[in-house]
Image 1 (spheres, rainbow, N blue to C red):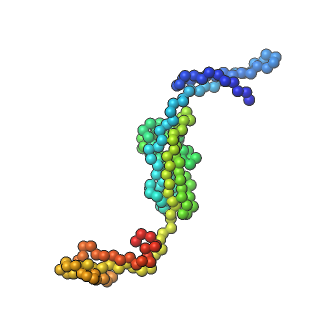
Image 2 (spheres, rainbow, N blue to C red):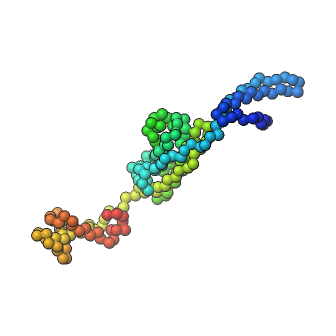
Image 3 (tube, helix red, strand yellow):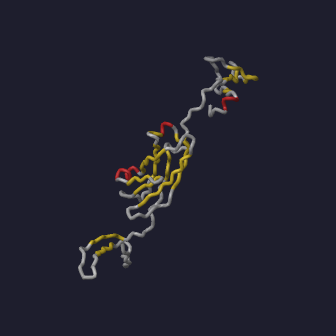
Length: 196
């Protein structure tokens, strides 16, 4: 392979190169022609936003299919058909439907249970210019909390006349209260199992 340096065209202009090889006897090969357009403009805009699954900090079971999770990328208005969205190395070429929707979904492998997933998203234009990255993070949590071992206690804070009860009275199972703001007491041991 031989490298020959020639003058580059002006920005936006095309360059046509014709190359052939001549041996020492003067025999010339068939010519080969290639074309390229100079595009050294600024890189495309970064994604407007990135969400893993539903966009919260966790990847739950309903957000995983075939051990894949969706990453939703909000596209900047400057995006064009043929641009490529790159999510952790997974590429998605934008179509007209993607541009009209203003976003695109890219499936990537979900992490192991309890592990964090960090995604880095860039947009590449048709000339190969790449935008700055936008990142997002989420932790896979598909394990439900333990079933409560003790039921919460519901208390009535007012009597039949609406007067404050001190101390409050416990409302039995299937009981009735006229208290608009009854108390709910969660056993201490259950608080460690998650949000009641």
